[in-house]
Image (cartoon, rainbow, N blue to C red; front, side, top):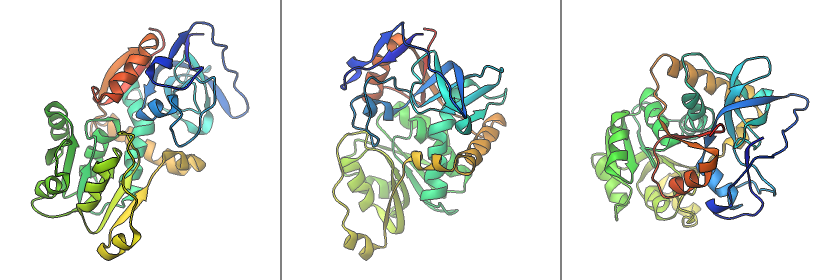
Length: 319
């Protein structure tokens, strides 16, 4: 079958299309999925260079999510242990979710990893309370576009979107953000407070790293929470000073969706059902971006790393 195979770690150039990848064989509790579309995530770019939280082993076919059909004709979206950049992949039954007819492939893919991440960032980690202010970094991305909408749905008092271009900031405003801030602001702390009408902020969802994390933490109000779930800049933030956190009553919380997979029925099934229902009813709008063919996987990674993309990126194994 056609697939992307990596035989050495590196940048986008190591993503190689092959025509003779052996077809995977399902085992107990798994199903062979005929992939219609796979999802592309920023985490994939880390996995390819082996800088992700979970070490990778070669040879490797990336891809942590796919939507497709099972041998008995069911249409499902699944979180994968890998192998999504291919025509077929093995999906665990416990991590596969039926897709309603009203929900398109791209929308389902936007929900299964990035949507559940946004859900847990707000509900499980930040424990957002009605009326609180929320800062969403990378607000035009896969997690960000959904986090903006879910924050408003959950009663946030003021949603502040942070993005790198006018187009991306406008998208976040169209999705319900109350205001938007340029990610390139030199004094980001002051810009966030200004955007919150002069007040420090209650919740920050942060996946950039470096100075963005540092200045966002400085903008937190007492009892504020910063949830850290990525390092897109590939620059580590400053070390967290516990005494500083205590003296200002601030919190820093890490989040990685992999831990939700330990109890998928509760920690993934519940949010997926809610997200699919909201999407099917039109209350939630997953933003679907560009679709790339398998032969364009390297270009997809380049575009993602250069912040040229918006919303959920798809991979079409038939192209």
